[in-house]
Length: 195
Image 1 (cartoon, rainbow, N blue to C red):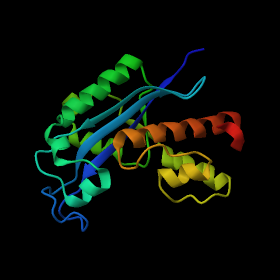
Image 2 (tube, rainbow, N blue to C red):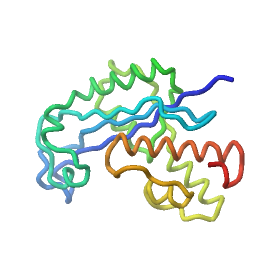
Image 3 (cartoon, rainbow, N blue to C red):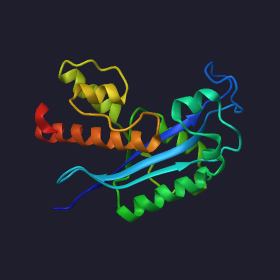
Image 4 (cartoon, rainbow, N blue to C red):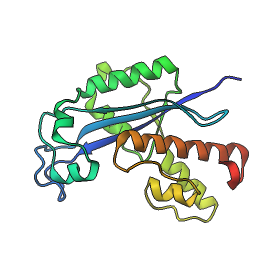
């Protein structure tokens, strides 16, 4: 039986100076500051094959709010790579592992952000995304659960533990992969005990 490999993506962003929380931002539009992804298998068991975190140099210091929220420092950004380099690494890994070209993400914005920042001529990767938050909301509705909340709270409702600290792209990508695995198994096997 062929084992399919998946990729879960998460991004951390610096916000523009128009955002009330980041009036000290040097940007007029949001920019990616960290790319995190996990390549994983669901069957026969959840297994992480590769976990990557890349800081992205946006050329300016970060706002105080984003530094506190993410724990990312100005020195992380200054020693980071370009968004094109981070994307190239993601593409090479996806090709090397022959992942399914539908990226798993929590919420709907990460692939949109990536497509805005990576020039079209450099895009060598599928543009489709599976929103795991939407998958959970359908599951929650069917099981009489609250549909609202972030990844950590939603996982807890399903008896799963969020591992690591929030607002780190690689950690959030890992937990998205873990939650996707749970929801996939629920759909495949049926019932709540699919973890």
